[in-house]
Length: 184
Image 1 (cartoon, rainbow, N blue to C red):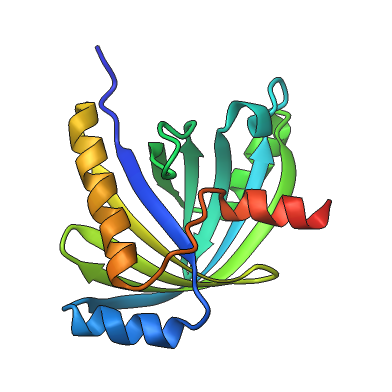
Image 2: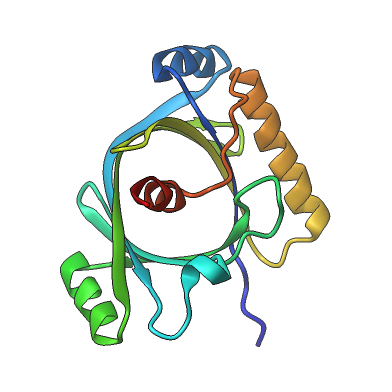
């Protein structure tokens, strides 16, 4: 049986001030959804280097919920579009223990405050990331086994949304990549 994919279409830009972006977003019809505090603990595989394979495994604590997430390699050069598998877990600390018992190595922690808005088929996240600054992410998802044309169309709509928000400093690297580069 073929596994059904969930493809995350994501584009991101640095933002000088989130207040201006928030005003534009609301004027465009965006609706506030939630504010969350997220702490992502990233791990590296014991037998392959995720930095080289462009994959990621993390445990995210988002307010009072915890998730185990796998992200596959990025599929295009313009965005962070990638396969994503995520499950809710009961206890983040036990999840970390399991990964460490399997040989996974804790790499870094990315902490942020995220204000989430909904606009059309997208979640628009206004992020204040510890040690990195402020960013805006536009995220959408495609289920099943989507054709490339559908992925490109949704990606282009997300990029257009960034432009409409007057955000032009696009960033393809993940917060983890940015944090690790900063620490070098």
